[in-house]
Length: 301
Image 1 (cartoon, one colour):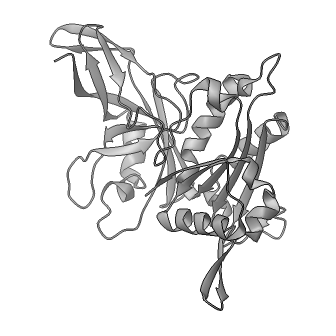
Image 2 (image 1 turned 90 degrees about the horizontal axis):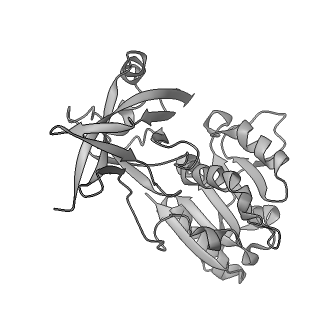
């Protein structure tokens, strides 16, 4: 076969805890080359922002290593072969790998330079092992970033709920490295990120995003939102940006908080990463308000 999937060991090189027992960032480092049956293959990282890699973490409930997808939060352009992602504990009854990532065992694995297997695609003729990506086409149900000639002319409103910020971190790192697509005759992309989290501890890369907004105000605006807990000194939005309110015919979607942050949503391409309820409520609210975006894509879990 011209291509086939193989799993190789990637070293756990970073463990950052945002909220103990709830949310962590991890990084897996792949080697430059890998030997299979006496043949050396170059490890190639061509992942597009907004896509996910496939790894085999341990499952607490089953006691087995499980195949799981993880959306990448950095990008191959600036961090080749270093796969970063943000993982939360889902607290679902059948949760298996998600609670394992929050354990002391993962910290110990990092401390001893342990590894986790990551999927690569073997291209025999080229002598390459290419990092697996979960999607290769831009579709309404995924967040693979558009080709450079497209996104560089777009105004993007990114709506992130909790760890749903992960693909947009990859977007921003890639775009920043590309100077947001700015050229002599093109002003470049504009991105507005609305990142909603329950508590300050769960705001991911908060200070780095504030710094980027200050550094590149013509290209990037950042609106952190806290829904459950916030300090008295909090100067940003509180409460949900998508709300349900009673109405004569039942419940109605109230997008007033979102419109306060982005009044002209109809001039943006909306990208959402979160749960299906948030997606469905947002689309219903946009229809009710008559403010439909230029395009809409969402990845939900």
